[in-house]
Length: 245
Length: 323
Image 1: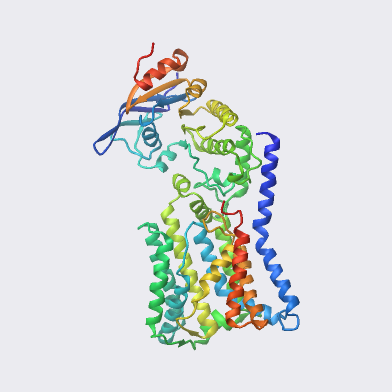
Image 2 (image 1 turned 120 degrees about the vertical axis):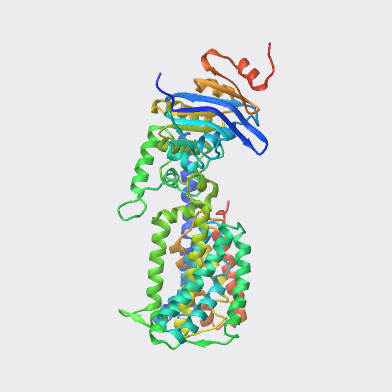
C-alpha cells in the first residue's frame, strides 16, 4: 500500500474548557474513501474544520504526504491541496458555473483581465469528465437543480484538490435521484488518486461508497472498521454506544 | 436530469433574461418616443436639447457607477449626495487660495476620505451600511452647511471650469468625455477584473466568497471608498459646470441615482448589476426631468410625476428579480 496522503495523529481540540475532540488519529490513502460517522454533536464538523484549516488543533499533528503541516485558515488548507464540499453549498447563486468554479482563483490573461475563455474551457472539460449534467458552463447557478449545484461544487473541489477532498454531508439536501447521481460522481473520484473523506448521516450511503468507516462519539474516536468486514449493526452500536443483540 | 427538465430550465432562463436585461432599454425607448411625439414642437428632439440632457446627467451617471459597485457587493451608500456638496465646496475654497491642482486633490480627497470612513465602519466595525451612510449623510450635510456658512463660493479658475464643466476637446464637451471614460473604465473593472468578480461574489454569497479566499472586508471597504471618490468627482463636475459650489449641490440626487441604478438592472441585494444599464437608467432619469420641464409642468407636478414614473420603473425592473 502506498503512503497515506493525510495522517492525523492524536488530534485534540479544546474550546475554552470544553474538549470537542480528543485522541483522534486517522490515515487516508490516495484513491480511498473514508467515511466519518457519528451522532449530532459527535465532533464531525469540528474535525472537518481542523482538516480544512479553519481551526487549529490544540494538540496533535496533521501530516500531508508524511510532512507535518500547520494551518490557521481555509486558504492554507487549499494551498495544501485540500478542498471542502460544504453541505450548504458554498456557491454564489447569481454567478455562472464557470465563475463559481474559479471563485477566488480566477485566471488572468496577459492584460491582467479575467481569462473567461480558459475558465469556460476548463469548466466544460471537467463537467464532461465527471458527467455533471448542466445546460452549459454559462448557466447561472440558481437556474440549476440541487443535484446539479452539488455536482458543480464537487467539480470545483475536484479541479483544485491535489491531495484530499472533504465532503461534508454532500447529499443532505438532495432527493433520491439526485443523491444517486452525486454518489456516482463521488465514486468516480477514486480514480483521481486523491484521498476522500466523506461525512454522512446515511449509513446506506456510507456502506455503498466507503472503503473504511471511522466512528466518532462525543469527541472520542470509537474505532475504524473496514467496510467489507463490518455491518450496520456494529456501526450503529459504535455510534450510539448501546450494545445490540 | 431528464432532458425535459433541462428544457424548462433553459426556457425560464431565457424569459428572465429578456425581462431583466432589457427593461431599462425598453423604458428608455418608451419615454423617448413619448416625449418625441408630445414635444415635437417644443424642441425636445433638437441636438442641443439632447446633448444638454447628457451634460446634465453626467454627475448622476458618475455617482451611479459607484453605487453599482456598492450595491453589487450587497451594501448601500446614502451619503453620496452629501459628499457631492462637501467635495465641491472643498474644491472651490481650495482653488481660490491654492489653485486648480490643490482644488482637485481637496475635492477628490474629501470624497475618498468620507468613503473610507463609511467603508471602515462597515467592513471592520461591522455596522450595517444603511445606518452608517444614513448617519454620514446627515453628518456631512451639516459639515457642508457649516463650511461656508451656507454661502455659495464661486469658481473663477478657467482651467478648472473648462476641464470639469464647460470646456470641450475635439468638439466634444468635457462632461461627455468624463461620462464616456468613467463608464468605460467602470465597465471594464466591473466585468473583466478579479476585483469586479469578487465584488459580485461578496454581494451574492459573502460566506462562499470568504471560504473561497476572498477578503470580504477589503471588498466592502473598497466599494464604499470608490463610491465616495466618484461622488467627489461628481462634486467637481457640478462646481466646474455651475462655476460655483453650494451646500445644495447633490441634495436631491440620491433618489435619482438609486433609481437609475436599480432601473439599470442592479439588484438591491447584491450579486448582479450593470454599469451600462446604470448609464441608460441615468439618461432615462435626465430625459424625464427635461421632458417634464418642456411640457410645462409646475415644479410640484414634476416631482409627483417623476416619483410615480420612478416607482413604476423600479417595480417593473424588480419584479421576480429579488426572489
